[in-house]
Amino acid sequence: MDNQEIIAQARERVIESVAQNMHLYGVTPSIGRIYGTLYFENEPMTLDALKEELHMSKTSMSTGVRTLIDLDMVEKVWRKGERKDLYQIKADWYQNFIDRFCAQWRKGTQMNMGALTKSLSDFKNVIAHAPNEDVAEQAKKDIDKVTYAISYYNWLNQVIDLFESKEIFKLTNKDNEI
Image (cartoon, rainbow, N blue to C red):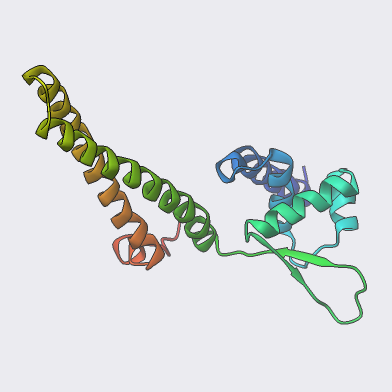
């Protein structure tokens, strides 16, 4: 096996791995293959070039690239003299992670905190007006569970803040070389 074949095989291994894990971003492996292919290209690519490389239909390619643009993982670029649209990845994987997952986490924590806060108020109201000790005891146990969950979401919001402020990089070695 010559060096070009080794390079192609090594790239394909990474592209396939990225493709299989793109479900974390809510997209299909075929869209992951588009991203992986663009990752290893040193120049922006047209939809036609991607279509030839990946043997996908132009419609699938267009939909996949549009999805990656919506995820802010790929951008359209301009080159003088080029009539077709060109696409390249946004190579900052750290920022991609922060943008994608922090938005999801923040939305989830806000929704859950709203439900937990409202339920906590309801449980306290039940205790204040409980017809018997059994009902009050049940509400107290539920308050303990809800209080624990609120504590968790407060912690998760702090973690999200660390990512969004990039303070997380002071706690970890972002530029850790292998």
